[in-house]
Amino acid sequence: MADTNDIQAFVQPYQIAEASPELNRSLDCMARSFAVTDDKIREIINEFHRSMKAGLAADDPSELLMIPTFVNRRPTGTETGKFLALDLGGTNLRVCQVTLNGDTTYNLVQQKFTITQEAKSARLWDFVAECVGVFLEEHDLHPPPGRRTIPCGYTFSFPIFQTGIASGNLSMWNKGFTVPNSVGRDVVNLTQSAFQRHHVPVEITAIVNDTVGTLMTSGYSHPDTQLGIIFGTGTNAAYWENLDKVGKWSGDRKGEMVINLEWGGFDNATSVLPYTMHDNKLNRKSSNHGLQVYEKMISGLFLGEVVRNALLYLVDQRLLFNGRSSTALNKSYMFDTAYMSEIVADDSPDLSSVQTVLESTLDIPPTTLIDRKVVKNVCNMIGTRGVRLSAAAMSAVLLARPELLENTISVGIDGSMYQFYPNFEQDLYKVSRKFLSEDFVDNRLRLHLAKDGSGVGAAIVAMTVDQERNAKQS
Image (cartoon, rainbow, N blue to C red; front, side):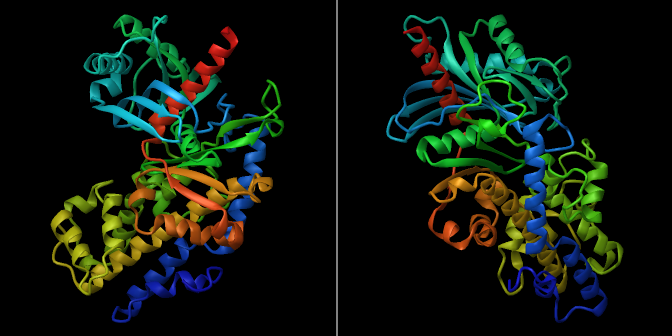
């Protein structure tokens, strides 16, 4: 792409020489609506900084939440020991035993349990306790000498308001969970009570968000880590902030603390985000209408649905697939973001992978090469917007600590978009060079995959809590 501050840079590549003028006009209009120019990114960064400051000063649901996590010790990579970790996500519960080797490396033994529909709607806490009991039995794990319980870190991937390092009240359910009598209650207490009912000798000593886990995992292997990000099914970030900037923190103001941004809810009012009719259609039909707007524009759960909406818009104008669709394409969330990755990566002359996705997977009637070019172009428009918005948020958070940019900074990232979407990491570097400076990005910025970070990070936080306890007792 040429001058990324010129709207034509986002329009011209999507014109198709052999297409009708009517189709090219529609593609032109669509490309303009998804464009994120450099000036737009600067506007987003400025709004990010304003909302970050407001969220650090006071709790306000209309701003970035900026939740203090009570995590205030950076890992050094020299810590050792074995620790248990639970990672409760939207699909799976992972139970892990993490061995920290003291040389910035770790070993992981883990078991995944698919969360049943019954657990999602009724008996989640007992389900967690039963799975942990199975893991302890199968791996013959017992409390360390002189202790009655095994210390455990708990990654909880749902919105909570933390009240301590090992306590947090559930704000709301998402990801299809509806467990009753849980919202507003301490999820550590709910889980711990289930452990007691099932005689599981485990004590949760720390609860962390999955992005905090990613930050801490990266920090163990790369002690200069400043930011942890999830670019996956959903998106969020956590970073180290000086406590003297956290106006709403009532404790000691010395040192740093990890702040959970909950940045998926940035600009829910869509005052600066490039929000289109296709985003609005998704938002209208979503269970959390009007919330997590930014997340819906960049994360894996939603990108394919935005593409589906845009394609159907062209179908309805009889500009694509000769006005025909299919049962699969007509159904919400059937255009998986994984299809986008496959389509964007297809450079064959006849776009054979695109053809396979459309005709074999989505059962669309035989497609023309122009149809396939249109579909690839729409995927590229929406994917490009996603990565540019992702780079804008990453840049905004790093620029919030300008004093650190003179040094090498690592960013730990986990998630399927970062791992599997074509050129995602490369484009994060490329876009952020404009806003963080070429010198910093080329010489001092290091992006790292923090795979399985959410589980390992919880164990690392549990380790730091255990060390503090032991220091106080000795």
